[in-house]
Length: 460
Image (tube, rainbow, N blue to C red; front, top):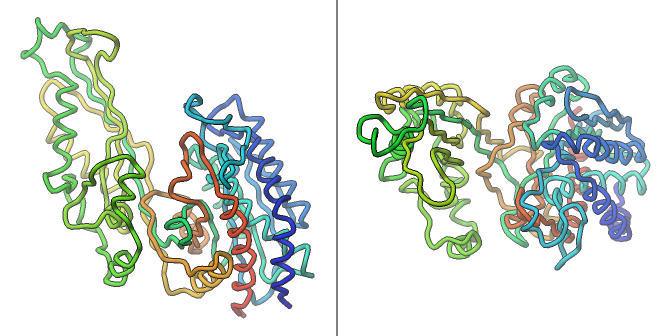
């Protein structure tokens, strides 16, 4: 029988212990992109595995060609859902170090937040689901559902080894629904469930012109300048209404439903506060759509980096021999990254001027996804979050991409509950990353209540 008071009291009484465990894990510099930190990445994985083992789960720290993957599970509960919790223990590099107010791997408590690399992405959020497991194990004879944990150490470098692991262990990982906490609430005091993610198609465009840099006075006007060509190509990728000009780009875009439009309009979104938060005095984008719709539910094309020519101190009059751009398209459900790439190549072939050789390098691709709003799992999550945070969650989309969510649907046939406890201003991937300790506490409560709510579903 579910003892709500016991769960709440245990989490309350152990709040300081849970916070110390978070500090301990955040102190491990598990930067997966840095080969010199490989031992620390493994140490963080072992820390998480040891915690799960101590709570009675059958736990394996599985070796891969890269960093280890943790797989742990509790006993099956006949007739009740099996839930797979996914998270990651690796973190982004902390650079630029000189912009941190405190050392990134010396967690500091400031204004009710823990400040450290990985605080919100994803160590803090992931740990709430282990804290809730502890609360159940210490206060009840058994769990109301079967819990499986899949925690990886390569999310921040592309999760190269997770897909083969899913394929090899499909039967062991079988579940009814997946829970991921690696997103954000809508706003402080307003919890949210993310039901849609954009996909991504990431590219590098290389332009080659003359065999070497040339004197611009001697050769200017007689050869095509790769930097000029790159600027012209980039400017041709959008029209004056903000629409992407890749052929057929919008053919497969699923328009927002009336229900979604109403939900977006009902959200307490302050556009002026949004502009102040990010330090701009105006917003732009595809004409005819709100800022939220542009960020969450419309496809985009954005330049991420440009490189060409001389960029040192003082003048140097050259025509550069080459130019390069990194850019990506954020894609919405039904857009196919492979088809987008094919149409992009056709556009580049038409735009590229004589005297320039071009190469398009595909660097990353995944489709967008939307999960059903009317499922029993979504209802259970809404009820649990309302109990944990004291307020009913709103339903939002997220402009970013979490490719593993597509893999869970493709390989396991399971949809994902994206239950974010973080905030939009948590400085994810940036200096002074933080996570509210109150959100950490309420996220742990919500997770514990989620196991109970899901346990009320009879699948027999």
